[in-house]
Amino acid sequence: MVHWSASTGCGRWFDCWNDSNLQNGSAIATQVFAFERTTRTNVELILWRHAEAEDKEPDSERCLTERGRKHAKRMAEWLKSKLLSEMTIIASPAVRAQHTALALSTHFLTLPEIGLGASVKTFIKAVNWPQASGTVIAVGHQPTVGRVAAYLLSGKEAEWNIKKGAIWWITHRPEEDGKQVLLKACLSPNLL
Image (cartoon, rainbow, N blue to C red; front, top):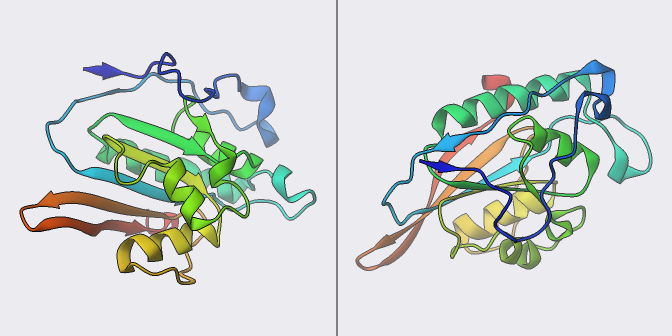
């Protein structure tokens, strides 16, 4: 079994949140997850748009609404039921992305390279696509996550809309005649 560890030395781990840091008394339990190591060579990228957030300024400090917290929790539960391999979670520094990631785990990297206004090229480099090993979950923002999905799946940037709290699960797998990029799942929290 492979256990989460903060000893990877890549970036800063976000592990200092407790109940008092979340709005309206919402608590997210601290858990340690164990995932089975697999022998596959696929690279899994899960693009997760942050859940619904309050309307306030400054934009980077918007917290999740009650509905947003429920959606983030539902999606996190679904993801936990599907993930079997080692994973890395990366989140934008914006509060709403941090709170969305917290629904899944307290251990994640915070990278401004996938934050508000990030370019597709910068985002892809930050998640190490397609060289990453295992599964990478990137919690970010529109329009960037939609543009990244479009670029990875079609080879061209386009304005694809990803609903708040939704995920697009993209797989990069080697084939004998090259590499193949597939959409493994596209799911909105309203469907859970």
